[in-house]
Length: 108
Image: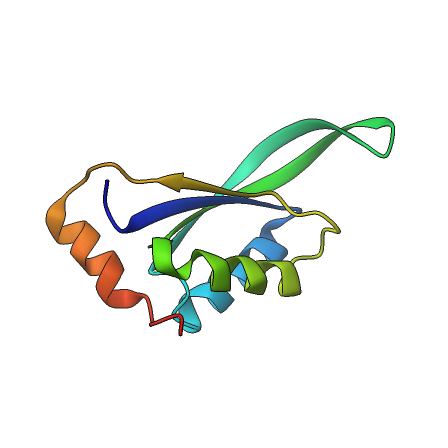
């Protein structure tokens, strides 16, 4: 295990994805956000099946910063219930992992 985590967040479109990504990096809550357009999501919401275009955000941050990052996403995300999934990074390039840690501000 490392101190780095990957967080997956779906955005409804490129504009929202860009806003969220820039906010997280500029505020020091994330080291990097990859934006993956062209995702289709099929899901049940309020009793109806939806099939929507979305943009996947792949966010790299630290385990210590997850709570603050989650709070920020909840504040700025247009969805009532945004997808926020945290995945542990069990291994990776030491120099990259150290860079991620160096880019993320102290959450306290």
